Length: 355
Image 1 (cartoon, one colour):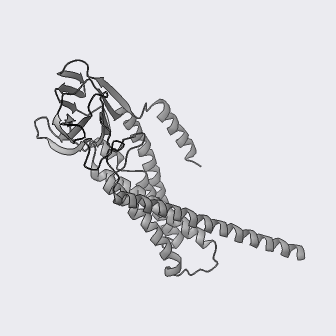
Image 2 (cartoon, helix red, strand yellow):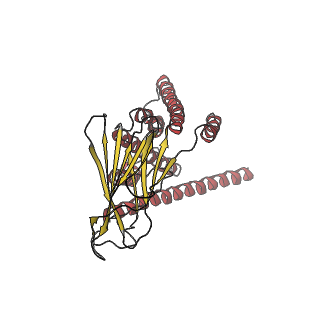
């Protein structure tokens, strides 16, 4: 109840103080190349078949940026090759980060591979400068794979990113929730130590959930922003959020099943093991989905230019089945507990009328 007012105030801060969560810069290349455009944190140069972005994210961009290119439909399909590099110092060497292409593969279909459009997302990884190099390609003959460079036509370039104003506001929000969850964890642990009930099952469950709640509030958020992005910290934060949801599912299942039994002893094989197996499937599959395929940030819609492989489809099916299994099992346990409690209440009323 004490968190309702802070949540209301935080929503007002996000609405009126933080500003928009995303900012988009639109640049149009008009006329003959070479074409160039410049902003304090962005330089774009288009020359022939190449377009080069130079980005300095300090004091302007946080978390990630998305580069999108639109070319008008022409007589022949236009495809793009793109490469992102980064360097930590003005005179340092460039480190290649990722490459992507919209050129069709041997089994590609027009519905899957979209010419004239390129969209790529790049998380910030602690570099002081990033470079995005685009190259225009065209087919040497009808139906062939794009193999030759072609001059870029008049195009629209978009750069979308999270502005620092919004991120610094979120630092205050994350700091508040991290501080409150830490205080709750320390206060609860100290109280249980004074009453010598720290090793009871209920106390251990609450302590574990409060610890996972601290991971859910992402205490590494501030450090990631100050470092200009860190993939290891981001991975640890997401895995902590997955563990929190898995621990919460496990707690709900055990608590709901415990309401249906009056026995104090609960066999491990019949009571705990099925629940552990189901929640473990959810946690492992969710972690593999993130580690292998990443996670698209909120409010961002990045089109995928490649077919989903069999492994990704299998992970999606397994994740969906595990979530449905948790929901159905929990609903059955809660329904059974309500039916049992209503029956006991009816027996008590009948006994009182007899008396």
